[in-house]
Image (tube, rainbow, N blue to C red; front, top):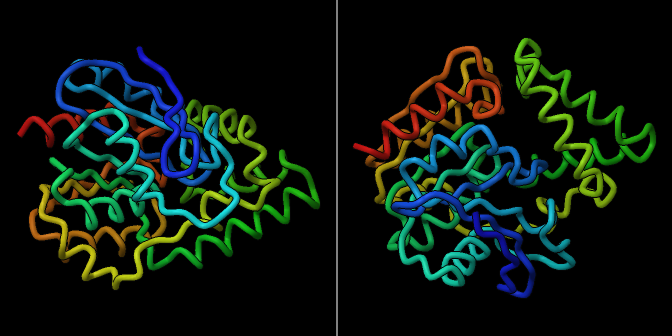
Length: 262
């Protein structure tokens, strides 16, 4: 495995590369570092060169101090790594970052996988929710804020015990994002384009994944993605809530591999 710090786009991004084959880039959710993909790495490494990285403001990457574009961070990271074209997999708000990138740089996207995806037109709503969580962390402590999040059954199904514990560990390790009021979202500046217009620009084959127990709003987004991305298909993974890759890794991994191999 290769690790490094990419000094790009006026920031520093920590990345890891493993496996061999066509590049597959993994884009995290808004509060989890790259270890959220641990259950995917061995399976994906058998088929792809896997690139995972910590978003600006999370894990080992630099904390943002001014407005920035996650889509442009992806673009500059790929340029830094001399990757001309890649499969892009984004989960949760990472799906929104992947859409930002795919709509602005379609020539660099072999295929797109959007798991439990958000979209950038909902940025303000996500920012408000995360600010409330940050306020709770400051008032009642990080642990209570994290446990409150983990008790939301549409975020992570409580019966998926190992996934709950893994998520707890990652969140505790990244406590600074609660303390800093989630700059990963607060300072994110998505494209100033209507979402349906952005989706219509995506030409790459697209897989949309959603967990059966995820919030109805995520299912509505998945339906809109399928409706507006011309070459797309949607699959539902039973028994998973929002963190579908952590909760049902075997089903998730096989869905992704089957799609990419076709």
